[in-house]
Length: 258
Ligand SMILES: [Zn+2]
Image (cartoon, rainbow, N blue to C red; front, top):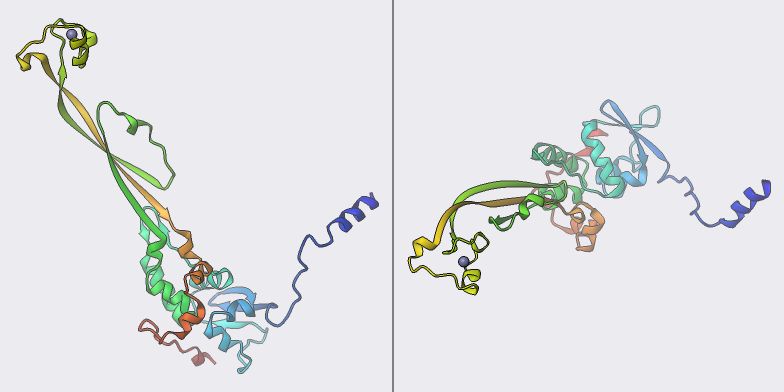
């Protein structure tokens, strides 16, 4: 048994990358945000946030006695700020029945300004989340010969609305009374049934139903929500930093804290 364990450990000596060594930038750092406590790393906080870069620059003695830092912010919103800083995924507050939560986006926009995270700020200010969730609507009409609407399948993000409409159509009647010729004048010609000149006599009007099916599908464009995908489109952090500070930045003043 010892040999087996030994062999296993020897067989895959390089299967996993070595655990990163703890340094000043990736050592745990504790934040007291409002009434909640968050643990993350210095590099996560400072890579995109000028606020945290200043706060943790070491130029100010602003840590609490236990080494943590107090941030006066709503922890429920800060959770999304931190999630973005960690993995670069933009927040999406969307509910299929209610749509986007615009008030929440606005609240988070103010946090992005406060913590000075230009790319998140731009994403929220320019409402790029509207591109993340889009609705596709198509309408298709079915008649009495096509009941395909009864067997429609689709994703859970799809809803269907049915609009039935009664209408009248003319049905050919066989002059000789053959039921099999009903609705099929070609058969009457083929079997030389007597053709009645009076058109009214050769047709009967029957009600039929047409079905208009409106298909509404929510399409999620996940590329819009990932910062690194945006970088490929030229929306780099440097590009944001190089912009003249746009009108949507109200220049938060983190230094007032220190
Ligand atoms: Zn006939």
